[in-house]
Length: 439
Ligand code: HSE
Image (cartoon, rainbow, N blue to C red; front, top):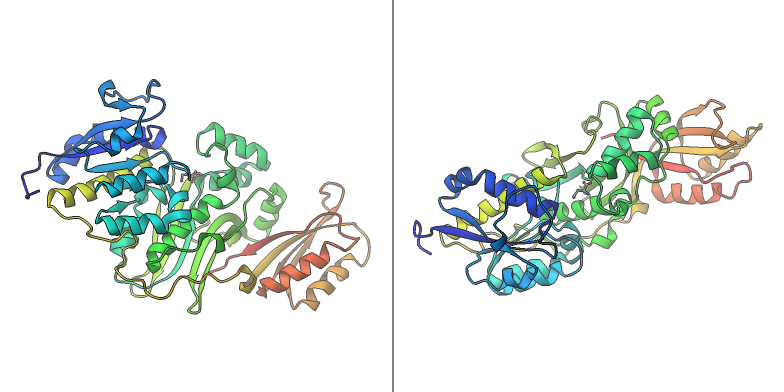
């Protein structure tokens, strides 16, 4: 299409839930702003959802609605297909089919990109169409665009993120109000932050999907999702949060990736961060992504990581990015992972056993002489050196908590020591371990 000749860029939406209706609302309410930014009207031609009856709180012409996703994909007038149903089911077929038919695709589907991205990225390149996925990481925070464009001059050395708003909300409520885990989870569900069910939010999978996507763009190759270590927050208690505070730390679910030269360190787990750490003040349902590039140095991105309006904002930013190109007759401007050729022979993720960091341990012990020396003996045999200990005689489920911080130690040694420790008859429960992230 020649510049200036296009009257409209036509969009079809598959999935009219929270993200779909948020997207429609942005397109409707900011229609004029968007027209001025694109230089053409962005028009929603069709919306597919199994439920076309429920009120989405925004007026929709009933003539746009269909129950058939294929009505959107096969419409010859639609330039951009939005896949907003999510999940690992039919979403993938819809995306591939739309691309095969020459449509550009916008998706918010982090699970699909993290777990089956390779096939989708290859299809986009083969079909000469664009794939945009700003809403897949960090909700309304334009971090994908930052990685694909703003930081594109840099080698990325470090990524550290609070990438799951639900877990962050739960930990914030446990910290501020002393709520037990289950009560904080229920609050998150009631407020609509949590996915339904919240399993993938609280077990670290959602954050691992997101860090996998960021690693993939940073290094130009799909990250092997299965190799990313993940641990959730469901084993933490308000006691751990209070002990962490006594040591001067707070607990956050962190997603971390570091280029170690001989491989990428990639992990998601609860971490103790000093109270003055940049991540310590990211609270409630907020997300933050800290990135270090070799020339730019440190960058920090912060904002709402979930919700109808922020996610709608991210999806519409992708539509605008595509619409500008469509209007100028450009396609395939940027490969999905923003690298024309991979930088190397594949991403190698280091096993968690090779990590070196400091640790927090909470032992549940019987209160009798010699227990501390039994524990420190096992630690010493595994070259784990203690930096501080708290034992206050505070009873937790009939035992006494002994809480320790260690100096930097090797995770493989910690795994061995804890497994031996769980055999000690003076310990009455499994030991709680939290990694400490100082830098
Ligand atoms: N459920 C996600 C979160 C938001 O809690 O951050 C969507 O990615």
